Amino acid sequence: MTRAEWDPENLPDLSGRSYLVTGATRGLGYFACEQLAAAGAHVLLTGRNPHSLSAAKAAVKRSTPDAAIETLLLDTSNMGSVRAAAATARARGRLDGLLLNAGVVHPPKQRETVGGHELVFATNVLGHFALAGELLKPLAAARGRMVWVGSMSTSLWRHLPTDPELREGYTPWKAYVQSKAATTALALEADKMLRAHGVPVESLVAHPGYSTSGRTRGVRGVNEPSRLTRFLDNLQAPITQSKEQGAWALVRALVDPYAEGGSMYGPALVARGAPRRATPARGTRSGDLGTELWRACETATHVKWPFERARRAAS
Image (cartoon, rainbow, N blue to C red; front, side, top):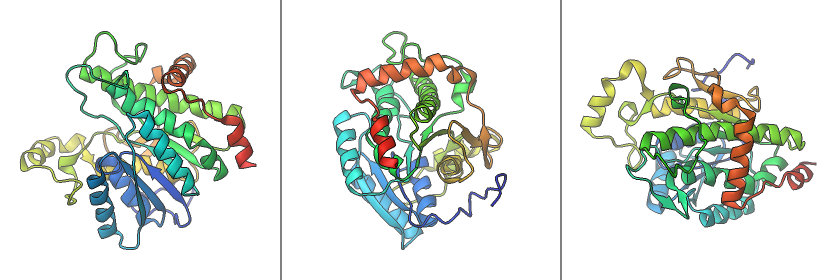
């Protein structure tokens, strides 16, 4: 395989490698797990519902009978759950990659809080910041990679997260887009911080384009859209793709040996298409924004990434 070549339906052999995926019980997270397992990877599916985790594991096994799959309870909106899941993941051994995918896609109409933090920001951003910090040492020991999941919406709407908790002016759309802008900025800031501290872990960001469940094949217990959903989603066929195809960019960012830290991947046609190198929205590339968000996340989660210990773990 050359730097330019990539076939999302024929991944490189991932035997011996281990990946943790958040939000793995449906949508992009599930299909990323399915693709990783089919390539021979050991996959740790995480989610907040034990029944959904069982259904997702069974579905992966139906697709790849010899898949190496484990499950782990994790609610990224809950710091206690994040710490407990991270401790369990560390005890399970090698970790080559972390796909930070879980999130609230359809925010509540009114601002809701969990643990004192706005729900969408807590779930999409704070939980992943804390989890990545808690798992930095095993990632460094494996010289691994973390991938944060952004959104093409950050290029369509340029509102930056100057008030990430949205204490004023809350709307569901603003909550979602701000969280994804924050995710992208943190992914880029993380790569700068890791390089500065000599930690051999890469941080990348990926977005799935416009991927819908109605254009995705049915998977029992995982993706079972109604006839109406399929009808409405198929009306948008020229600008949409399946969740399975949306996961292609996430998986490429996670496992492509030529992918570089600090880069972004997304569909070739932005909303759909084969996974290609992409460009983060201009505002998310601001170093000041990344630095401010980093400090805000440290304060909110009480987690400081152990850069020096991670660097020693890799030596």
